[in-house]
Picture (tube, one colour):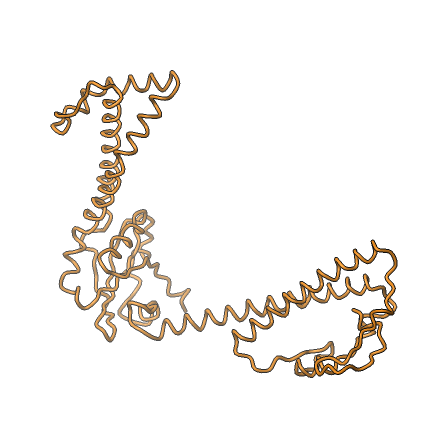
Length: 335
C-alpha cells in the first residue's frame, strides 16, 4: 500500500524497484493506526494464502511458467510483472485513504481467490477423470473397472440382470473369481452366508457376558422400578437356567441369577437375529459366469442377492478373498 504514496525512487533490490519512505507517512491518531494495522494484517494473510495456493497448483500441475494476466488479457511472466511493477492509479487511486485502498484490494483478492478455487476444482476433476480412465484401461479385474466390458459385449444383455424384471427385493452382485478359485467358487457360495453369520453371532456372544453383568449391576443399583425388573427376571430363572451349563453355578445369589437370565436373553436375541437372516440372502442357483475373463484368468460371475443383505454378502466375500460389488444394469445411462 505504501508504494502508492512514495516517489518510486529505485533501490538496490533486483526483485522490486520501489523505495518506501516511512517517515513521510502520517496516519492520524493511534486508534487510526491500530485499525489500519489490523486491516493490513488481514490483507497480508489473504495474500499469503493466495500465494501458497497458487504455488501448490503450480507444483501439482508441473507448471514451469506462471503468467500474470492484466485487465486487458495481456500475459506476462510473473517475474517480469514483479520487476516492472507500476502502480495502477486508475484502479487504486492515490486519492483514496490507505483504509479505502485496503478495502478495494481485499475485493480484488476475493475475486482472484474465487478464480483460483474454481481452477483447483477443474484441475481435481480432470485428475480424477484421468485416474478413472487409467483404472479402466489397466490392470486386471481385481483392480480395474470392468463396467465397459459388460456393456460392450453383445451376448451380455439386460435379461441377465434382475433390474430388467423390475425387482425391488433383489440386487445383482458381480464377483471377480480368481483362477485359483474357479473349481471351488460355487461350493464356497453354498455355505458362505451361514458361516459368516455364525461368526458374527459368536463374536457378539463373546461380548454378551460383560453386557449381562453391566445390565444386572445397573438394575441392582437402580430405583424401585429397577428392583421390580430384577424380580421379574428372577421369576424367569427356572425357564432359562435349567441347562446343564448352570448345574455347577451358585444360583443362591439373586444378583448372579439375574445376570445369568439376562445373559440367556441376550443369547436368544443374537441367535434369532442371525438365524432369520440366513434364508434367502443369496438366491439358490443364481450364479452365472458372464463370459468375461482377463489376462490372468480372473472371471466375472453374477449372483442374485436379497437387497437388504447385499452389504453383508460383499463383506462375506471379502473374507473369502473375493472382490465384489453391487451392480444395476443401465446401458442407456452408460452410453
